[in-house]
Length: 335
Image 1 (cartoon, rainbow, N blue to C red):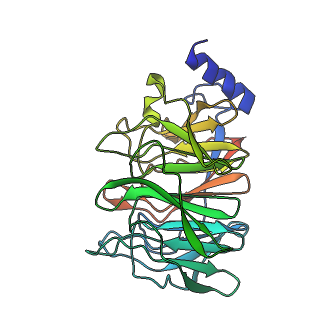
Image 2 (image 1 turned 135 degrees about the horizontal axis):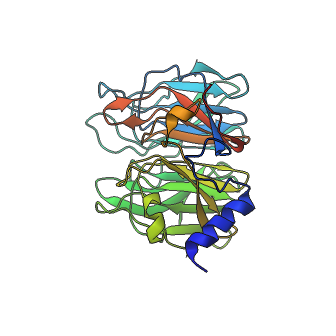
Protein backbone atom coordinates (compact mmCIF):
# COMPACT_ATOMS: atom_id res chain seq x y z
CA UNK A 1 0.00 0.00 0.00
CA UNK A 2 1.19 3.50 -0.73
CA UNK A 3 2.87 5.03 2.36
CA UNK A 4 0.76 8.20 2.12
CA UNK A 5 -2.45 6.14 2.22
CA UNK A 6 -1.18 4.28 5.26
CA UNK A 7 -0.47 7.59 7.00
CA UNK A 8 -4.02 8.79 6.28
CA UNK A 9 -5.40 5.57 7.71
CA UNK A 10 -3.23 6.16 10.76
CA UNK A 11 -4.87 9.52 11.29
CA UNK A 12 -8.27 7.87 11.48
CA UNK A 13 -7.01 5.40 14.06
CA UNK A 14 -5.61 8.23 16.16
CA UNK A 15 -8.88 10.12 16.00
CA UNK A 16 -7.48 13.12 14.11
CA UNK A 17 -9.42 14.92 11.40
CA UNK A 18 -8.41 14.03 7.85
CA UNK A 19 -9.61 17.39 6.56
CA UNK A 20 -7.14 19.81 5.09
CA UNK A 21 -5.98 22.39 7.61
CA UNK A 22 -7.33 25.17 5.41
CA UNK A 23 -10.89 24.08 6.22
CA UNK A 24 -12.76 26.25 8.71
CA UNK A 25 -13.74 23.50 11.15
CA UNK A 26 -12.63 20.16 12.62
CA UNK A 27 -8.93 20.95 12.55
CA UNK A 28 -7.79 18.96 15.55
CA UNK A 29 -5.17 20.29 17.95
CA UNK A 30 -6.24 23.46 19.76
CA UNK A 31 -3.70 26.10 20.75
CA UNK A 32 -4.01 28.38 23.75
CA UNK A 33 -1.81 31.30 24.78
CA UNK A 34 -0.95 30.84 28.45
CA UNK A 35 0.35 33.37 30.99
CA UNK A 36 3.68 34.59 29.55
CA UNK A 37 7.03 33.42 30.89
CA UNK A 38 8.05 36.00 33.50
CA UNK A 39 11.81 35.82 33.03
CA UNK A 40 13.62 37.64 30.24
CA UNK A 41 13.06 36.28 26.73
CA UNK A 42 15.68 33.67 25.87
CA UNK A 43 16.66 30.69 23.76
CA UNK A 44 18.48 27.43 24.50
CA UNK A 45 17.11 27.21 28.03
CA UNK A 46 16.79 23.87 29.85
CA UNK A 47 13.73 22.44 31.58
CA UNK A 48 12.29 19.58 33.57
CA UNK A 49 8.82 18.68 34.90
CA UNK A 50 7.97 17.56 38.44
CA UNK A 51 4.30 16.69 38.89
CA UNK A 52 2.17 19.40 37.30
CA UNK A 53 4.92 22.02 37.46
CA UNK A 54 7.57 22.79 34.87
CA UNK A 55 10.90 24.45 35.61
CA UNK A 56 12.72 26.59 33.03
CA UNK A 57 16.29 27.74 33.68
CA UNK A 58 19.47 29.12 32.09
CA UNK A 59 19.71 30.07 28.38
CA UNK A 60 20.81 33.29 26.71
CA UNK A 61 19.03 36.56 26.02
CA UNK A 62 18.96 38.99 23.08
CA UNK A 63 22.00 40.84 24.49
CA UNK A 64 24.11 37.67 24.39
CA UNK A 65 24.04 37.32 28.18
CA UNK A 66 24.15 33.81 29.63
CA UNK A 67 21.55 33.26 32.34
CA UNK A 68 21.27 31.32 35.60
CA UNK A 69 17.77 32.18 36.82
CA UNK A 70 15.02 29.58 37.15
CA UNK A 71 11.24 29.88 36.94
CA UNK A 72 8.45 27.52 37.94
CA UNK A 73 5.32 27.21 35.81
CA UNK A 74 2.25 25.91 37.67
CA UNK A 75 0.08 24.44 34.92
CA UNK A 76 -2.94 24.10 37.24
CA UNK A 77 -2.93 27.79 38.15
CA UNK A 78 -1.33 29.07 34.92
CA UNK A 79 1.17 31.15 36.92
CA UNK A 80 4.94 31.65 37.06
CA UNK A 81 7.13 32.15 40.13
CA UNK A 82 10.87 32.65 40.39
CA UNK A 83 12.86 29.99 42.25
CA UNK A 84 16.43 29.65 43.48
CA UNK A 85 18.97 30.46 40.80
CA UNK A 86 20.86 27.61 39.20
CA UNK A 87 24.10 27.49 41.24
CA UNK A 88 26.50 26.73 38.42
CA UNK A 89 28.00 29.19 35.96
CA UNK A 90 25.41 30.99 33.83
CA UNK A 91 25.13 29.07 30.58
CA UNK A 92 23.26 28.21 27.43
CA UNK A 93 22.53 24.83 25.84
CA UNK A 94 22.21 22.90 29.11
CA UNK A 95 20.35 19.59 29.53
CA UNK A 96 17.54 18.88 31.99
CA UNK A 97 15.44 15.94 33.13
CA UNK A 98 13.41 14.85 36.18
CA UNK A 99 13.39 11.62 38.15
CA UNK A 100 10.81 11.18 40.91
CA UNK A 101 10.36 14.43 42.78
CA UNK A 102 13.67 16.02 41.75
CA UNK A 103 14.97 17.80 38.68
CA UNK A 104 18.48 17.57 37.23
CA UNK A 105 20.31 20.14 35.13
CA UNK A 106 23.84 20.46 33.77
CA UNK A 107 26.19 20.70 30.77
CA UNK A 108 26.07 23.77 28.49
CA UNK A 109 28.47 26.58 27.70
CA UNK A 110 29.18 29.92 29.39
CA UNK A 111 29.95 33.09 27.46
CA UNK A 112 33.30 32.61 25.75
CA UNK A 113 34.03 29.56 27.87
CA UNK A 114 34.71 25.85 27.56
CA UNK A 115 31.92 23.32 27.36
CA UNK A 116 30.75 22.42 30.86
CA UNK A 117 30.12 18.99 32.41
CA UNK A 118 28.93 19.86 35.92
CA UNK A 119 25.48 18.68 37.03
CA UNK A 120 23.08 19.58 39.85
CA UNK A 121 19.85 18.25 41.34
CA UNK A 122 16.96 20.47 42.41
CA UNK A 123 14.42 19.70 45.16
CA UNK A 124 11.19 21.70 44.68
CA UNK A 125 10.05 21.01 48.25
CA UNK A 126 13.07 22.83 49.73
CA UNK A 127 13.86 25.07 46.73
CA UNK A 128 17.50 24.00 46.96
CA UNK A 129 20.12 22.81 44.51
CA UNK A 130 22.72 20.13 45.25
CA UNK A 131 25.80 19.37 43.16
CA UNK A 132 25.97 15.77 41.94
CA UNK A 133 28.70 13.84 40.14
CA UNK A 134 29.93 15.50 36.95
CA UNK A 135 28.69 14.14 33.65
CA UNK A 136 30.92 11.23 32.63
CA UNK A 137 31.31 12.32 29.01
CA UNK A 138 32.77 15.52 27.64
CA UNK A 139 31.10 18.86 28.32
CA UNK A 140 28.69 19.75 25.52
CA UNK A 141 25.61 21.54 24.20
CA UNK A 142 22.72 20.47 21.96
CA UNK A 143 22.07 17.12 23.64
CA UNK A 144 19.03 14.88 23.89
CA UNK A 145 17.80 13.77 27.31
CA UNK A 146 15.12 11.35 28.45
CA UNK A 147 14.12 9.29 31.50
CA UNK A 148 13.21 5.60 31.62
CA UNK A 149 12.90 3.43 34.73
CA UNK A 150 14.32 6.04 37.11
CA UNK A 151 17.43 6.69 35.05
CA UNK A 152 18.18 9.90 33.20
CA UNK A 153 19.86 9.48 29.81
CA UNK A 154 21.83 12.36 28.26
CA UNK A 155 23.88 12.23 25.08
CA UNK A 156 24.73 13.24 21.52
CA UNK A 157 25.36 17.00 21.15
CA UNK A 158 28.39 19.13 20.32
CA UNK A 159 31.70 19.71 22.14
CA UNK A 160 33.55 21.21 19.19
CA UNK A 161 32.61 18.09 17.24
CA UNK A 162 29.30 16.29 16.86
CA UNK A 163 28.80 13.39 19.27
CA UNK A 164 26.80 10.16 19.57
CA UNK A 165 27.73 8.84 23.03
CA UNK A 166 25.07 8.40 25.74
CA UNK A 167 25.40 8.27 29.54
CA UNK A 168 22.77 7.52 32.17
CA UNK A 169 22.46 8.87 35.71
CA UNK A 170 20.99 6.80 38.53
CA UNK A 171 19.96 8.66 41.71
CA UNK A 172 20.07 5.30 43.53
CA UNK A 173 23.84 5.02 43.02
CA UNK A 174 24.51 8.73 42.38
CA UNK A 175 26.70 7.81 39.41
CA UNK A 176 26.84 8.14 35.63
CA UNK A 177 27.19 5.03 33.45
CA UNK A 178 28.14 4.81 29.78
CA UNK A 179 25.32 3.36 27.71
CA UNK A 180 25.19 2.02 24.16
CA UNK A 181 26.03 4.92 21.87
CA UNK A 182 23.30 6.32 19.66
CA UNK A 183 23.39 4.15 16.55
CA UNK A 184 22.17 6.87 14.20
CA UNK A 185 25.51 8.62 14.15
CA UNK A 186 26.87 11.87 15.54
CA UNK A 187 24.62 14.93 15.67
CA UNK A 188 23.39 17.89 17.69
CA UNK A 189 19.94 19.42 18.14
CA UNK A 190 18.05 16.12 17.92
CA UNK A 191 14.83 15.27 19.81
CA UNK A 192 13.88 12.38 22.09
CA UNK A 193 10.44 10.97 22.91
CA UNK A 194 9.66 8.23 25.44
CA UNK A 195 6.66 6.04 24.61
CA UNK A 196 5.91 2.92 26.67
CA UNK A 197 9.41 2.90 28.17
CA UNK A 198 11.12 3.00 24.77
CA UNK A 199 13.06 6.10 23.74
CA UNK A 200 12.75 7.37 20.16
CA UNK A 201 15.51 9.65 18.92
CA UNK A 202 16.11 11.41 15.62
CA UNK A 203 16.28 14.65 13.62
CA UNK A 204 19.08 17.11 14.41
CA UNK A 205 21.98 18.23 12.26
CA UNK A 206 25.17 16.41 11.30
CA UNK A 207 27.81 17.92 9.05
CA UNK A 208 25.28 20.50 7.81
CA UNK A 209 22.89 17.71 6.80
CA UNK A 210 19.39 16.99 8.13
CA UNK A 211 19.18 13.22 8.75
CA UNK A 212 15.91 11.42 7.97
CA UNK A 213 16.57 8.44 10.23
CA UNK A 214 14.57 7.53 13.37
CA UNK A 215 15.74 5.16 16.10
CA UNK A 216 14.31 3.31 19.12
CA UNK A 217 16.27 2.48 22.29
CA UNK A 218 15.17 -0.30 24.64
CA UNK A 219 16.99 0.07 28.00
CA UNK A 220 16.16 -3.53 28.93
CA UNK A 221 18.34 -4.83 26.07
CA UNK A 222 20.50 -1.69 25.64
CA UNK A 223 19.96 -2.00 21.89
CA UNK A 224 19.16 0.70 19.34
CA UNK A 225 16.79 -0.38 16.54
CA UNK A 226 16.34 1.65 13.37
CA UNK A 227 12.75 2.52 12.55
CA UNK A 228 11.42 3.73 9.19
CA UNK A 229 13.19 6.73 7.70
CA UNK A 230 11.14 9.80 6.84
CA UNK A 231 9.89 9.22 3.31
CA UNK A 232 10.32 11.70 0.46
CA UNK A 233 6.85 13.13 1.10
CA UNK A 234 7.78 13.49 4.78
CA UNK A 235 11.18 15.11 4.19
CA UNK A 236 9.98 18.24 5.99
CA UNK A 237 10.07 16.32 9.30
CA UNK A 238 13.87 16.49 9.20
CA UNK A 239 15.05 19.51 11.19
CA UNK A 240 17.20 20.56 14.14
CA UNK A 241 16.47 22.09 17.54
CA UNK A 242 12.78 21.21 17.24
CA UNK A 243 10.08 21.05 19.90
CA UNK A 244 8.56 17.72 20.92
CA UNK A 245 6.31 16.20 23.55
CA UNK A 246 4.35 12.98 24.17
CA UNK A 247 0.62 12.89 24.92
CA UNK A 248 -1.31 9.63 25.38
CA UNK A 249 1.50 7.58 23.84
CA UNK A 250 1.64 9.69 20.68
CA UNK A 251 4.75 11.76 20.02
CA UNK A 252 4.45 15.24 18.52
CA UNK A 253 7.18 17.14 16.68
CA UNK A 254 7.07 20.70 15.32
CA UNK A 255 8.94 23.97 14.87
CA UNK A 256 12.77 23.98 14.91
CA UNK A 257 15.20 24.92 12.16
CA UNK A 258 13.81 23.54 8.89
CA UNK A 259 15.01 23.88 5.32
CA UNK A 260 11.43 23.97 4.04
CA UNK A 261 9.97 26.49 6.54
CA UNK A 262 7.62 23.68 7.63
CA UNK A 263 4.80 24.86 9.93
CA UNK A 264 3.12 21.52 10.46
CA UNK A 265 2.49 19.52 13.60
CA UNK A 266 3.66 15.94 12.99
CA UNK A 267 2.45 12.98 15.07
CA UNK A 268 4.36 9.74 15.57
CA UNK A 269 2.54 6.50 16.43
CA UNK A 270 5.14 4.08 17.81
CA UNK A 271 2.69 1.16 17.55
CA UNK A 272 2.61 1.44 13.76
CA UNK A 273 5.93 3.28 13.24
CA UNK A 274 4.08 5.89 11.16
CA UNK A 275 4.17 9.68 10.99
CA UNK A 276 1.05 11.75 10.24
CA UNK A 277 0.41 15.44 9.65
CA UNK A 278 -1.99 16.69 12.32
CA UNK A 279 -2.33 20.30 11.21
CA UNK A 280 -0.52 23.18 9.58
CA UNK A 281 -0.46 25.72 12.41
CA UNK A 282 0.96 28.38 10.09
CA UNK A 283 -1.78 28.10 7.46
CA UNK A 284 -4.54 30.75 7.38
CA UNK A 285 -3.82 31.76 10.96
CA UNK A 286 -6.25 34.67 10.73
CA UNK A 287 -9.03 32.08 10.86
CA UNK A 288 -8.07 30.86 14.32
CA UNK A 289 -8.27 32.36 17.77
CA UNK A 290 -4.66 31.45 18.63
CA UNK A 291 -1.76 30.96 16.24
CA UNK A 292 1.63 29.99 17.74
CA UNK A 293 4.79 31.68 16.55
CA UNK A 294 7.35 29.43 14.83
CA UNK A 295 10.72 29.18 16.58
CA UNK A 296 13.70 26.97 17.33
CA UNK A 297 15.79 26.25 20.45
CA UNK A 298 12.63 26.46 22.56
CA UNK A 299 11.69 24.59 25.71
CA UNK A 300 8.94 21.99 25.25
CA UNK A 301 7.30 19.53 27.62
CA UNK A 302 4.02 17.76 28.35
CA UNK A 303 1.86 17.92 31.46
CA UNK A 304 -1.26 15.78 31.54
CA UNK A 305 -2.97 15.82 28.15
CA UNK A 306 -1.33 19.00 26.89
CA UNK A 307 1.98 19.91 25.31
CA UNK A 308 3.70 23.23 26.02
CA UNK A 309 6.22 25.37 24.13
CA UNK A 310 7.94 28.41 25.61
CA UNK A 311 10.97 30.66 25.01
CA UNK A 312 13.08 30.06 21.88
CA UNK A 313 14.24 32.19 18.98
CA UNK A 314 12.85 33.07 15.56
CA UNK A 315 15.16 35.07 13.33
CA UNK A 316 16.71 37.60 15.73
CA UNK A 317 13.72 37.61 18.11
CA UNK A 318 13.79 35.74 21.41
CA UNK A 319 10.46 34.83 22.96
CA UNK A 320 8.92 34.91 26.43
CA UNK A 321 5.45 33.60 25.54
CA UNK A 322 4.05 30.13 26.17
CA UNK A 323 1.54 28.11 24.18
CA UNK A 324 -0.30 24.93 25.10
CA UNK A 325 -1.48 22.34 22.59
CA UNK A 326 -4.37 19.94 23.17
CA UNK A 327 -4.58 17.32 20.40
CA UNK A 328 -8.03 16.10 21.53
CA UNK A 329 -9.72 19.47 20.97
CA UNK A 330 -10.71 21.09 17.69
CA UNK A 331 -8.88 24.28 16.88
CA UNK A 332 -10.97 27.31 17.91
CA UNK A 333 -11.94 29.73 15.15
CA UNK A 334 -11.52 33.47 15.52
CA UNK A 335 -14.65 35.30 16.60
